[in-house]
Amino acid sequence: MEKRPQLDQSVTQTDAAYSALLDEILSCKLAPGSKITISDITQRLGFSVGAVREALARLSAERLTVATAQKGYSVAEVSSSELEDLTRTRIQIEQFCLRSAIENGDVEWEAAIVAAFHRLHRIDLVIPGDPPRLSHEWAAAHSTFHAALTGGCSSPWMLALRAMLYAQSERYRHLSVTLALETRDVDSEHKDLLDACLARDADLACERMGKHLTLTSEIILTSPVLATK
Image 1 (cartoon, helix red, strand yellow):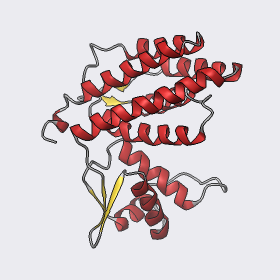
Image 2 (spheres, rainbow, N blue to C red):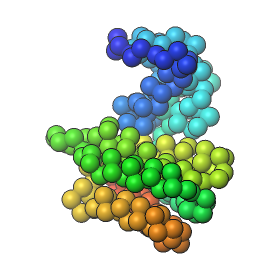
Image 3 (spheres, rainbow, N blue to C red):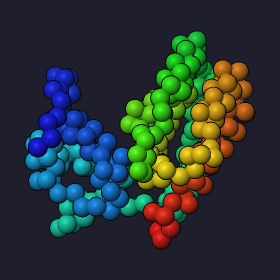
Image 4 (cartoon, rainbow, N blue to C red):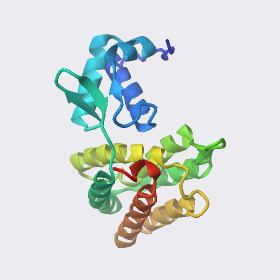
């Protein structure tokens, strides 16, 4: 059994089970389409059956797992058509949140996005290997940076939708991390986004965000994983 960390008293076992399963789904340790056996999860991660069931119900509400009568749970499938739809929707939500953040963000928001970019800039994207693997630290810093950019948005509901769409897109990133590593300067794209936000240029920031997300989608669509989906 994998030993799970000591839980903070404020974190319930269901929350911990949810976080552990979410991490395995987003990192594709639990592959798209794979069956999730509750007994295996409880034995491997050390959570109660009830906590795992509740966590899976939450993940199903977020469309990351699928519950089927008499068959239990499985990880949601991926497809080219879903990625294209996801990207279009995500661009609209990200741009809305970004405009609101630029309009409403204060000096603390500016400090947060500068700090988030600095940390992301200093972490390597991949762990060398054959094939290379996406760095967990980079993925966490990347999530923090994109959340920070929109952190000044005045709409909690739009931020909640943004977070859900971001999580969905992360599965695709992990599936295709080895693509276009030599031809794309992701760090410069992030710096350009930062600069546009600090300049309070909402139109430029939204344009750059749209291009950034579209390019990511176009690269992922070349993945052999999606070729037959």
